[in-house]
Amino acid sequence: MASSPLMPVDDVIERLLADAQCLVGTESIKVGQALGRVLAEAVVSPINVPLLSNSAMDGYAVNTADVKLGCVLAVSDRIPAGTVGKTLQPGTAARIFTGAPIPQGANAVVIQEDTSLVDAGVEIHEVPGDEQNIRRAGQDIVAGAQVLPCGHRLRPQDLGLVSSVGCAEVCVFKKLKVGVMSTGDELIEPPEALQPGQIYNSNQYTLLALIDSLGMESIDLGLVADSPQATDAALRNGASVADCILSTGGVSVGEEDHVKAAVERLGVLDIWRLAIKPGKPLAFGNVAAKPFFGLPGNPVSTFVTFMMIARPYLLKCQGLTSVALPVSYGAAAFKVTAGSRREYLRVQLSYDEQGNSRVDSFQNQGSGVMSSVSWATGLAQVEPGQTIDIGDALKVHIFTNE
Image (cartoon, rainbow, N blue to C red; front, side, top):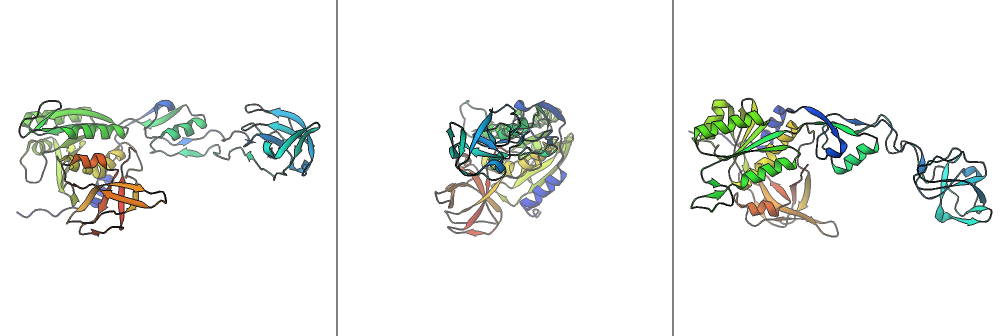
């Protein structure tokens, strides 16, 4: 029986994202607890920022109509930050400090370095222009403006921005719960001693940490014994406690294995052969109406298919609007010719002092070489049959937690 043709990676991602829906509800939490969470409602500023026009520098608030080079103005007021000064008297200057509100009657600030104190007041050595050294009310943010959109994942600087407009709480999506299970009698947990034919269950630790790093809640469904009963029980438990389920190993075209049969009993399963290296067989479906991914078992294949295919789907289920890894370009420092599948090479992208880019490839690109993933800063994309020479531009998907 002829095998089905390999599916282009982009087609699979497009299909998955077209079907993906936000699977979680919303909650209001304090801004200080919101790092990494996804906004369920846009943040709209109730105030102008700055609230009042204020001085950008330490110096003297003046009305430019009163100022000439070398003139001396009496100092009529002193305005520190947090204090509202009196209306500026004609022909005078007000001592003012950075952040202090501009008094009525003033339209510029002469910086301290352009003045000198004399017995009669302050001598002006530089004539300012209108509005010079003034931050006008609403210069940064106008009341009623959207400062962050729905679907945005909150970073440390975003928490500062939200706080700057006076918001103490934000409405966010609840954390997506993702269950992770590993199958295979050859797997054992560290630190048990390895017996011949056994390997450590590294995929579980990789996936649980990746899910946590995305601001989701990982659920360890454990190492599942190779039996129909254990597999059914693990999948049923996953569907009861998680919003999505990930499994590694055991689901491949033409295999008679317990995961494939169990998913088909409990839901629906599609197995796709992707034009991707590393990785090729990928399963997607549902268990009791909960989305299910069956990822390849080789550690690098697991990582690559998660980052390029499962990750964007899960992020959309979490309510995020921007789900792709950031992309950069660099000059190849190696030669390679791709085979019949799109290849994702483990690479390091770096820049020299002149800003010239360089992409270095890990020497061993085998699908079981997990050290290549730990070493890499991204995945270089090479299309089927493409030949890369030294200096050619490479598209690199950069690893990030967002």
